[in-house]
Length: 233
Image 1 (cartoon, rainbow, N blue to C red):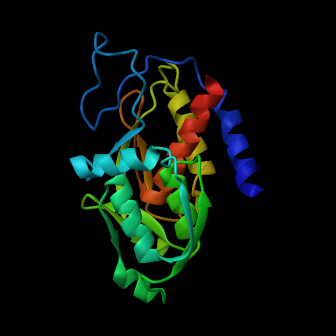
Image 2 (image 1 turned 90 degrees about the vertical axis):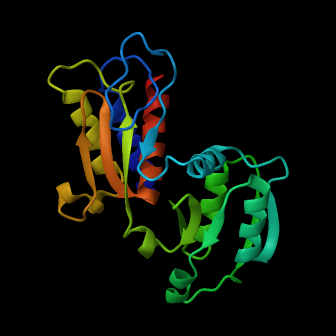
């Protein structure tokens, strides 16, 4: 219930943002596209440091896609076998962080059960790993299955294109409102601005946000921005 109230509040905050600006493909920390570039194309959510390789891009694309028509259906299947199946089925490199699992008292044989259909691979993977308090991150162009303690120690820097969410306010108030919404609604106690962690969020030129956070939190930020976009449309 607490999460639901937070998301609702974020959506309400989003309604106060200014009129939508041109939707353009996200760029890394480079100059913004000129006006005669593809201004009508939908914005890419973000670009992250260390994810520019083709393998990493393929992993992110696969995670965002729906499960295949057969879905996932198994009972008490060893974790390692499930990951081998996903690796072959979705053609993405997956690796277990054995040392992290051992530190948490887990093995590659931990049983997993699932009967999942009509959701994204990302959501399915989250549900599977949650059975043993595990998570994932993209490291060295591999989908690494690890523990939250390890994932929380690895900050990833991503550049978000939010020009479609803010108005043309010259005083930059709209993007600051978006920054405040993200800090307040997502992983509240991890931001350095709140004195609770090392995560950072900074505006970069009109309409870009540079965010240094753990990968699981980046997923939450992407979900929040997607919800705001749906609310504004």
